[in-house]
Length: 202
Image 1 (cartoon, rainbow, N blue to C red):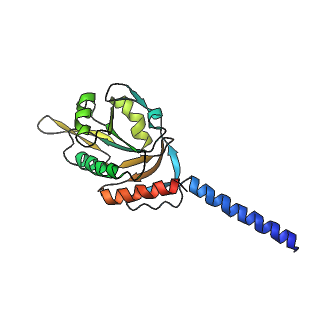
Image 2 (tube, rainbow, N blue to C red):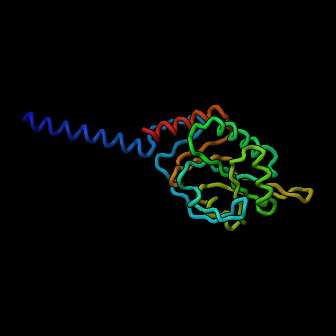
Image 3 (cartoon, rainbow, N blue to C red):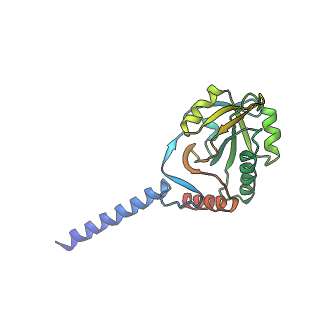
């Protein structure tokens, strides 16, 4: 085999390795999360149409242009929701992934008005975004993220909501790139988001 051919093959090999490394970085491969799972391929989120706390339309376009931590819950939630929101408030103060917005999606439209969401979320962080919609409007987003929200009637005539407690990380194109499962730890979640930030800057 001639030196020229060997050099050519080596050059092609180096270029292939470089291209592979670049592609891996572009799709976030190699991001190791302590408290979550990085998806091997970003997943698109279905179109949906909800309302923000001021009654304005809130759809997929509102999730583009910045990373988003999305969480389903309701203001009458006794434990999981306030605990998770308190943890997210701690994480946001550290700013591990610049530009990240926290979006709280109510699964209890009968009781959660825009005003009640505003009052509830402001107790944790004034920048948290609350959105709501009726069950039909919520369905596409729930299905797209494989999340659940089920009403459970209580013996006293009241009701509660059983819902997914997962945190969903969306990228700047509003695609699902990672999921985090409870119980949540502010230090671990902060460290994971630092990892994501470092990877996207490579």
